[in-house]
Length: 336
Image 1 (cartoon, rainbow, N blue to C red):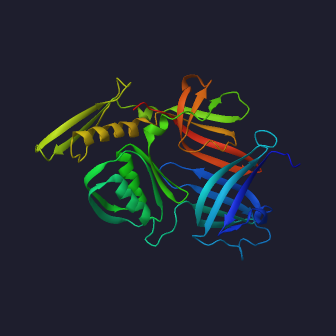
Image 2: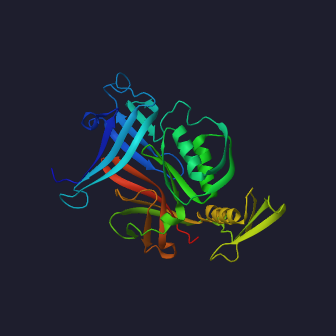
């Protein structure tokens, strides 16, 4: 039995490795690797002995480190590991019969200021990276920034939570955010979409369990983005039109934003085109568990007819329930 294919959810709770202690009670472990929000985990435990509803009941804010260890998964003797990250208990539920406990934890720490506290603040003559550094620190996180430098005259946070404000600033520049491993990660989405695919997923292969693709008519691609702004130097209203590459007959999106110059207007118009168009072709695939299928990587889709092509993984769910499966939500990459 030592060479049996196995997936093990390794759990360290408040600095103590409890993997073996909870093994008799563990029903399932789920890790959600998300874009634009915090990662999260859910641990479901059988509790017929009433330990978890009693002395073992987790407390809100308790720290959990989690990983998925694979033994003999791809071939005999081979090992692999998915480091899920660090999480903080957010919710504990108890139900029955039979008695069971569900622990939900988020990758955002519970800071004194509160991750859900709406605040008002202003920055002047600074960069996006500096603003995001302040926001990350306020949320108890470290900033990881992989994007160009953007300089602003003034930026105002108006009654928004820190992380919601960070997401809105990044989105305006065509950047993506996520909270993982006690970090606020901000990256250039287009740059990541251009990276090499980590694998090809082919219909008919043994590890493809199910798939569901769609082209959404409700999200018809825009062919142009028309951005209007007031130029403070010339004292004139300026209109800039961004023509989306490869899209000829779509509608025109008209927006008003307080851009300081033409360069900023061009960036924001292109980013808005990406934000509106990137969900038009998407899919979901369930695979035999694969630790490489994480948010932010690209894959090649093959033998799926009109849906073939290069896709970006927006989110993934890794489920350990005796076996191990991975669900990926993906969308077709854009060239702009």
